Image (cartoon, rainbow, N blue to C red; front, side, top):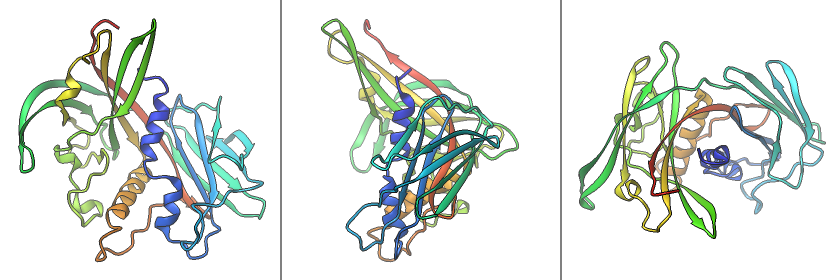
Length: 310
């Protein structure tokens, strides 16, 4: 498995910076506490705390001094610390969470402001390989091209509504001076499966927006579903360099409804920046007394391996 995969996922989840949130919210006066945390089992707890700024300000955000964070797991305190004013994120080691845990994060600053956010850790949802094949696709821009078609079977739980995100990473490992060195990068894949299409009943009037792999089980609630994605054919080959190998990691994230609404609203807001006919979009927010998001997620993974010796 990719080392420090949770860090790569957090980077993927926060593809818009926290500071951008303030710009989208268009606060007239600023000064509200902003709290973020994306929480998963077996990963480092990371918490962001700052203050919003006026949309006329030249600063991205205002740092919090004399800030304090308290973390509750299932109604019991598991961490309490002073937020580092010179950092954007506080990294907290040794605080462990499990599927089903209820989490509450409270924060306050020296001026007397306080905020809080609640979430749960969703269960993992298993998925299995169904098939992979090289196929020819045609489009209006590039004509015909070969791609690697991947089918993943999702075992969606019955009754409850589930929210997902499919993130794909490439890892290339090479032997350099007797030491294996690996590099990872995000893979941009074609989202032709119906689950990625915007569903009008899910609250968006704009079609064909790429929601970065987020989707719900609207089309297959409680059933197994064969999800299809296309990868550029270059990812289905062994690297040219001798002693190198390529692995493609498929990470299926199980999200809360809060994250799903947050991510969609951010994408729609970003999409509508340059469209004067679109009314300003308010970013989904689950922080009492302030701005931001506290949310849980879980991960199931599988991989394709193109190995030539490492």
